[in-house]
Length: 111
Image 1: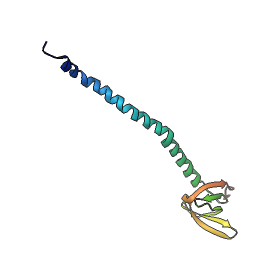
Image 2: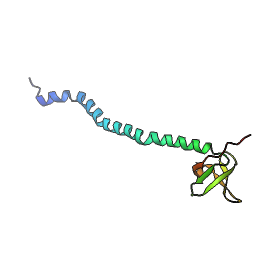
Image 3: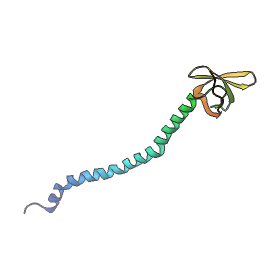
Image 4: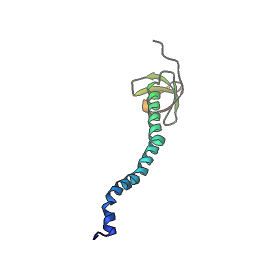
């Protein structure tokens, strides 16, 4: 009898506030999910592919370095370095992570 309509409406507002918070967070969650599938997941796949490519470099592979030098791997020094022949009798050492592309796969080494 003495309770106004405005006061009675505020008593039910907290229940509706929880739904409003969920509806305001939902677009951010959807954006994150879309970004994960369009950006993060393909990037991880590319990183795995590149690691596999660098790990499988062998002697006689033709490679391209990050600086654009094309050469043939003559020796795998260790896990981090390669010896690359870029011209007749000219050999350089290249850090494995500096290889940007493997053009021609060489023959497997017979041991």
